[in-house]
Amino acid sequence: PVYTIGDCAGSYRTENRLKNRDISVITPDNFRPYLTSYQGCLDTDFVNAAFIDTYKESKSCIVTEWPLPETINFFWSLIYDYNVCAIVVLCTPEKPNVN
View 1 (cartoon, one colour):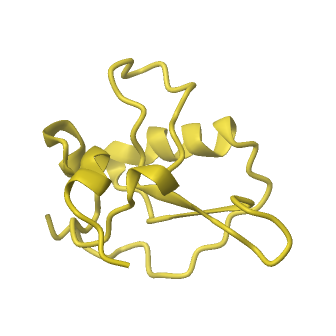
View 2: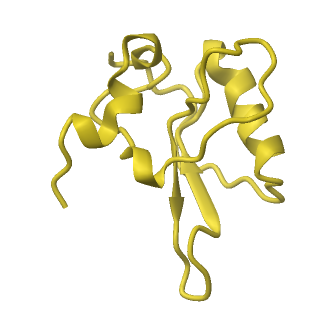
C-alpha cells in the first residue's frame, strides 16, 4: 500500500521526528499503538511501532525499531502498556540514526 503524510501524521509531527531511528521507516497512524503510561512526557503518546496480525489473531504482535537512547523510556512504556511477554531483536542495535 501507498500511504500519504496524512496517514502517518504521528510520525511526521515535529516533536516525533527525532524519535524515529530512520524517517523512511514509519507507521501509519491506524496501525500504531498509542502510549498511555509514560509519565515523563505527558504531551505525547507516540512510539514508532506497529501492530501486526498473525494467522490466528489481529493486532496480536507489535513490531518496533531498536530504541534510541532518548526513546528507551517510550520503548519500556510500550512493553508495559501492552503487557508484552516476549521481545525479539532482529537487527543490530548499533545502527546509526539517519534522520
